[in-house]
Image (cartoon, rainbow, N blue to C red; front, top):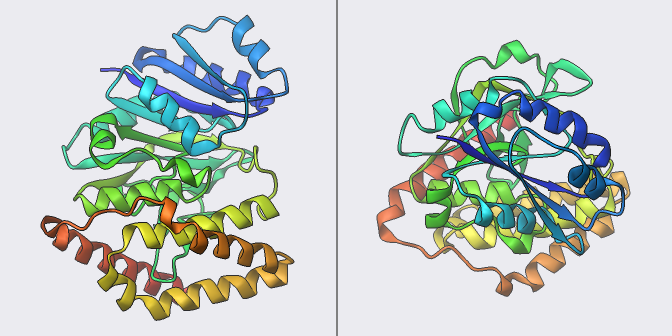
Length: 319
């Protein structure tokens, strides 16, 4: 069995050499590398077209930046293999990592995704992300950020795999749906994770798989108008799309507090109006989002999701 590597690229020529050379270290397990270029204006296309690699390179050229979600979906639809490795271009993949991900994801039928241990590129002893946790406040938290890598050595269940370095089963993607094209970028992996949990699947951390990640290479700084607005809008969509009415009612106070506290936070950061603009857009355009249809067979899975949201909230409040 081999994997299809799927990577969006937008003006990332400066990262491609390191990224692709690291993939060549695990060439035995790669069936193809699919690069989706989102209308780059740098030398990305020239580099990809004028260099030879020891794996099949499939290049999809978009005339404009269609966003992360649509680009990854293009790659998934093109992929020839059951296992999809979604990986950012601003990364370096440690040798043996793809094999480790393959071994874990194929170990049980109910595993939908496995995430690599993402370490900081400039400080390879510190965690960047080992799984994203979502809570009652509608906040997403990167697990382990800035902790030492030795603290995460065991396979563990996580709420959501970060799509910047995660392997998925294409057959399950076909069942529950791909990334939501409407999201463009941000929160699309959490949305996908909730859908997987609604259908009874698990997401795991694979600590034996190591990916060094630069971070914010395409969108810039940690907080900017582009990211703040999109994340706010998409967070509204995540709640609207995935939570059935009983859970929306049950969690209303927490959701309200979560969005309000986030607003106050961004006011201090100078992005208060930008955050509100994203919220308004999310509310006014929610009809364009396809809600997850409630099915009684998944009732117990909604209880499991609610339990996890409560636990994640308590963990957050303790810190």
